[in-house]
Image (cartoon, rainbow, N blue to C red; front, side, top):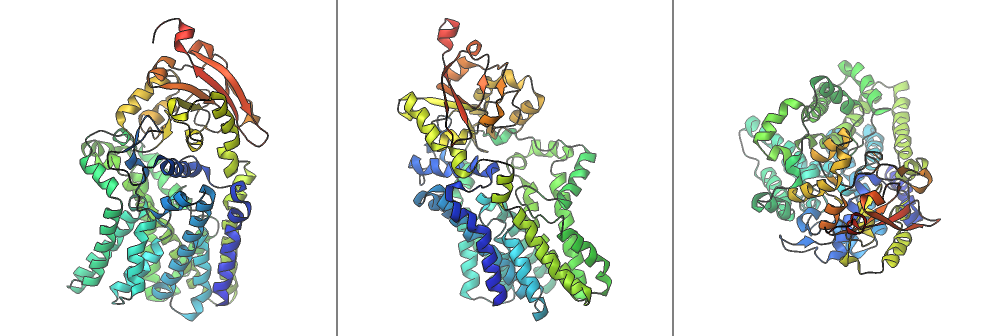
Length: 559
């Protein structure tokens, strides 16, 4: 009990900045503040949380399909509906961390390391797993996998209590099928198939549990599945071109993923966990046969996940993907989202192998656990983003500053359209502006092609930006060659665009009225852009140059 209490205290300390600092806390920006957090607020204010399948969100791109924003059965959306964004974010983090610790601890204790001598390894590993810097909007998509595996393995062994079934039924409401559990269920299904051939009998409860969870995901994410089946309109995903790596770069990516990991499933296993594996492998011959076999098979599986991930981007795949659109629109590389589960189970097993060596290795095991906890604390968002001088939650969205912009324009926000330069569009969206630009992985392909006309002059100057937009396009941004792939130009940088090529005529034809630029555009008038006013405040990291599109006045002709 002391160990569990200590672990709970450490998790509480890890989460403390979110509750103590509130909106002044620093949290992940990439694929978080720049997207999901803002989306939840837009969805909340749209009144379309339970909108029909053909409903749209008029605030974004003149009508973004409602289905691009997830499902109303997702409990995270309702947290953001009933609570302020930062409060919802902090509570979600707490839910996930607690479930992650409980799941990994139960899995290790019940099915992996059952001896009393492994108690501290089980607690320490579960604690480390629970404070990994996971992708926040993934919810329990990866960190909930140990809890789900514990329930499935219990049911597989004939233990069918309400606890196991509660886990099976509740997890889909706080997870994503395509961002974790599709791949997890595929793995568990292979375990069921293995049992079928080995035992020559159908394990009905085990099969039923798999079917129920899969069915729940299909029902909960009905918008995704029905849009794939019923929608005839092509989406931006149809132009995804992921498989473009030559063989040497692909092989390099295998080892990069294996040794370092991936941004969306950060395991931070390189400094401590990897050396533990090496030491455990050195002593593997002297380990108990079952443990030895389990460690080696799991290590092989771990490496194969990195191989699969890297080779999904190998250019040799592309002809196959061109034949089958599902291979372009669905990212099967995400089988590597199983790696956090695998890596931390391997960590525990490796530590246990070393613990059995006795002597100095016992102390080494506990030092490794403490060191990994310290590594994970060093990567706490509050530490990382404060050190790198990134905006806090409050600074990022800068509501008082954008209130000034709204007041100056002085018109109902639904009556005009804006786009951003050097700034994430979600900031304007969070502040109620109707934007022509956006960050979404699913929007009409026809809109992408229309939007491209606005920036084709800039894309022609920069091959990297051109490939980024044409072969992905999730960031439907006003790109500028001189800014590159940077969307956070704070006022202290004092950057200017000297030669901007912008199709203002096409912008106005799409309904565009204003550009909210974080940098000064030196040749704005040549582009039919008139500087209205500059906005700044001591509390905000941004300086906003408000440009009004006026192609007719500058060029002296009709649109």
